[in-house]
Length: 202
Image 1: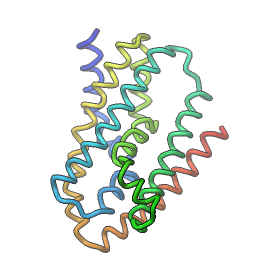
Image 2: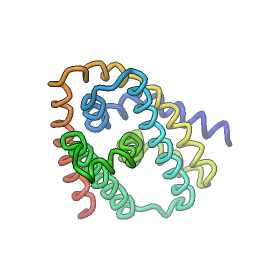
Image 3: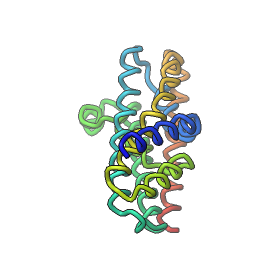
Image 4: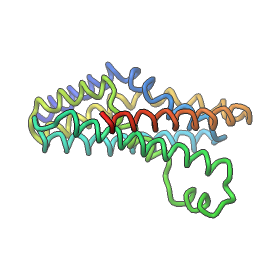
């Protein structure tokens, strides 16, 4: 079961990874473009995003293994809505920290909050069609181990496409591009806030 669950997750991730990347583009692209980072730091930030996604996938796989067939629409909607609202809050906070870094709260936030990891975690539980496919496959195992391993494989498969974000970092060398990145972050934050509220009232 171990090899089957992991390989099924990897194949599912590889086959749907581009769709996942496009779905999360409103978060990842503004983040990469909003700051002039050296190549090493850019790769590290993307690695932190990946780590956040890994934690989210393993957590969700574990929960699905516990709930099994008991998972239902209202429970799922509340989870998605809460995640989107938190994602919106972090995106808007990220913009504030970048625009007004001298503020005391911003200094503290910049020092103690790992924005890439949080973005990765919260987008990791942002339900899209590939994620729903992984959920369905995980539920079919009806076990904590099988569900968690499948999501672990799903992470490996989808993570190959995160490499495509690395070249975007070079565009952030231009001040105008960084400003566009921040503006887009605000727009994406408002969009995710509206979507999150919509899920909570369903």
